[in-house]
Image (cartoon, rainbow, N blue to C red; front, side):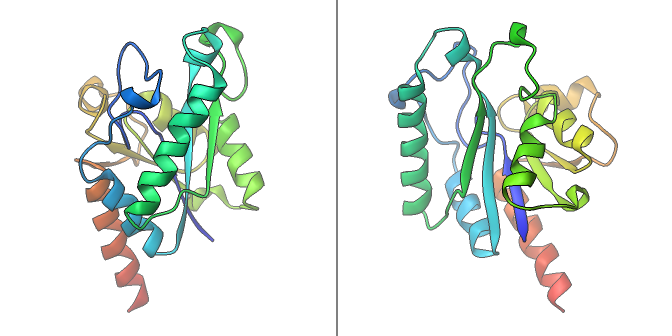
Length: 185
């Protein structure tokens, strides 16, 4: 099974320092839905893995988070893509849970749910060092996009070795298309 894990804020949709607290604040980054459609059509299962500490901080409810994810699913499907699952950590940083990125707990949960025994081929696309560190600690392949906080993350120079870097999610999809077609030959 081919699986691609995506962070949400800063990769699929615009991020906000004030948190994305409702459906009306959730705005798609240009071309991200087309990218997800491309990747879906390559046969990848796409799983979203996102920290949502706004829930733990009382800034928005699980119901509002679910409404945001319903909108995301709907728009992705309208573009021809599919998100197989959304995993999220609702905890505040002070909760010291095992699921909040940069800890790899959600990555391990995703692999368990989808019966992935070899994490070394699992890729995760993110825009922050937390995303990259989570997949690196799990033993997978980190991919940084320059959208969201990606440019700042890249300039910090703290990305794990072997991290692939792309301008945006569409460029990731083009890389996967080229790579998969090369393997098919």
